[in-house]
Each structure stands twice: as C-alpha cells, then as structure tokens.
Amino acid sequence: MTSKVETAVCEAFRVILDLPPDPGQNVLRKESPIWDSLKHMEIIFAVEARLGIQFSEEEMGAIDSKDHIVRLAVAHLES
Image (cartoon, rainbow, N blue to C red):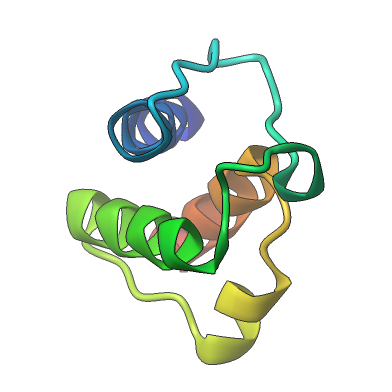
C-alpha cells in the first residue's frame, strides 16, 4: 500500500510544485521555497482526492515533509 500512496504523493508534488521527487526522496517544506501555505493546501487536497482520505486540521498543520504526508496517508488507509 505504501507504494500506491508514495506514487500519489509524488504525483501531487510533480503537478503542484513542478517538483518530480523520486519515490525514495524526501522533500522538506522548510527547504522548499515554492512550498508556501497555498501550495501546502493544494498538495493536501490533491492527496486527499487521489486517495479518498481526509486529514484533520491538526494533521494538516503538522505536515512538514513529503514522507510525513505518506505516513499519515498510509495510517488513514489502514484504519
């Protein structure tokens, strides 16, 4: 399941940030100037739509990396 989630998250990053990360590559928000608050929400909404999940407000505010999104999404899909 992780590979499906990783693919969906990487696709969101590619489309929204024009940043095609490799599946094993992490992207940190603090190190990506293009990842501003608007892009943050766009990424979250894209991942939610692709995977049929919904993050809580607390989760959305805490997300700080691509890997963090993957972990949260996997947890939602497994629950």
